Image 1: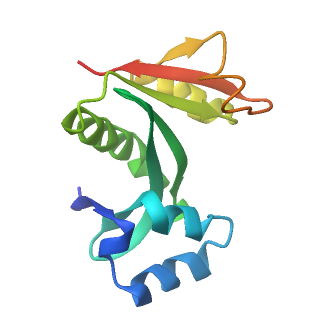
Image 2: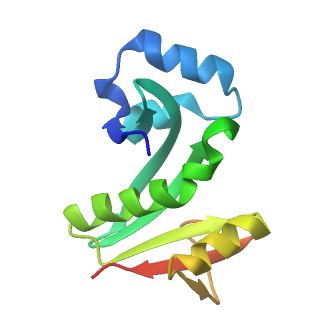
Image 3: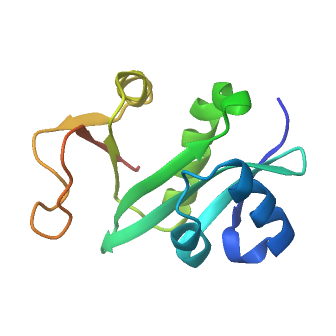
Amino acid sequence: MRLLKLILARDVSYEQLEAFFNKNPDVNKNRVFENGYVVELNNAIEGCFILDQVEEGIYWLKQLYITQSEAGKLPFLLEAILVLAKDRNAKSVYVHSHQPVVDLLLEALQFYPQTQSLSEEKYPVKGGSWWAYNVS
């Protein structure tokens, strides 16, 4: 497998970020740049995500995106993100999924379905399903 690196978006050159965002207009580039990470594969940015701390030890994985050509690397990317969360002393990582295929992947990676959202009043989200992973 090619080398997968997680890099703070603000530590990547503006040119690299712009090239990625221009090819992937659905990504909220301002939010990713402010507090997100990019995913580098073979010296090219192929994805991004935000690992947002919402409470002490509780993180919300948002805006997870990987290019279609690298979609097969998504399980490896999620595992790398969980290692990053562990390095940040996370107790739990939450994900809000809108796609059945993502639900299957989360279940395979030992995420557990949640009956309610992370925090209804603070983080209202419509539709989809919530998943949590207990970081050991």
